[in-house]
Image 1 (tube, one colour):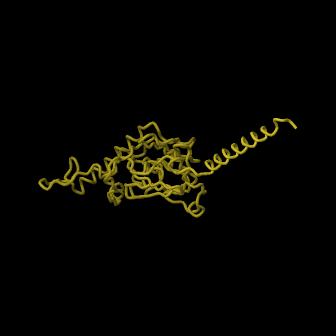
Image 2: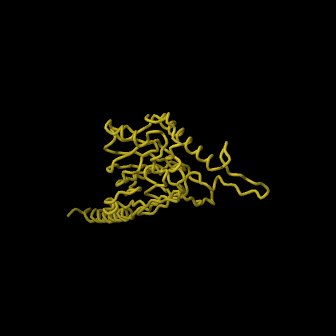
Image 3: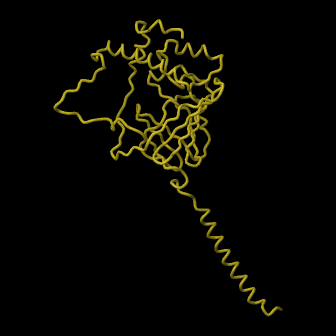
Length: 285
């Protein structure tokens, strides 16, 4: 036997033991699950300006009259304002370059839905909320298994699982205004997929209808204190997916941020459908 064999065996044994200890420690570190804050962007909190940010406490020494510019606050003034506002707003929207490209066989149907620029058939005028027109949530509550989107506008909410589960088989069987949403993370981005949207909803206030197989993909990307939202609509009625205009919101720094109660009362539909408020010169566009 080599006279140096015994020391060499001892050295090899010590090295192997040390290596086993390092591998065991690395295995423990790898097996330790990452916390939600480490694995995903922190989306918790209020986003954007809230109603409370624009409110001022009433001045007891002053009387404030809440009316319409150029009007006296009467029903007649409101009727004139709402019909002309909707029509003018629709004309401005049609000047926008970013519009969904529908297949030719659906053009006439869209004209029939919004034939005089008035939005009289727009479900949003009847207090019916729907994706993707909800846009950016004003508050997000985030947990390891789901995110909750809260909207100050009429106090709406969405609960979106993020734990890898598929679409809910019950919710997908029954189309709804919010549809069924599931989410997952891609780096600093929360990706939300929504299906099973009721085909009575619109993609926009200019007669932008959709089929019952529409799919909406929302990408919420966090950069510093700013949350960006990019939305893409996939639908068989479209010649290509429609990428809606991106929106963004900064983290609301107000320590007293709170939602104000907002109730939707449909006061528009009757006025928009009243024949005396229809401008015949803008029909049949």
